[in-house]
Image (cartoon, rainbow, N blue to C red; front, side):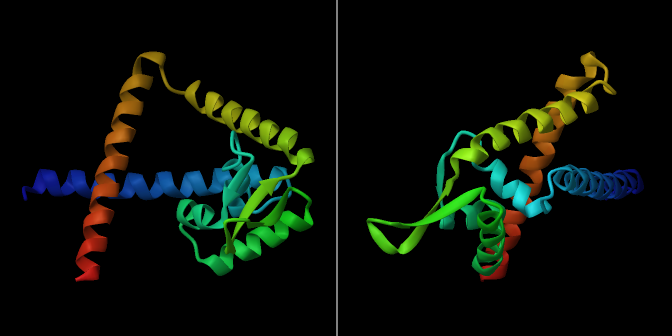
Length: 156
């Protein structure tokens, strides 16, 4: 590895960490606008276009433990955003349904979340936006490939 490539790798590492922290701050602020935790927000956003989701799918998507999902769902249930019901085909599993009142709320979340990102894009020249999307996609794929590879190594 050359000195230049090492410096570029260090720069990428620093920038991705800063981006992750900025995204976390944005998500915390956005969730707080609605009296939600960031994980409650992420969970509710999963229901955009899906009136019902299995708990196992929520666990996989959010990449958190079943106990943590239970805590989040209990909170959302108390806030009347969701209901839980037993899977009629397998009594050991549950589905989570959005409540009729929360459909409008979730649509509002989606609209406002999109508006935030439209605002972010106003700071980036239109001619640079496609390049930004392409590069971000490549970074995500590379990070996912590294994570998957690392998981395989840990299993051995």
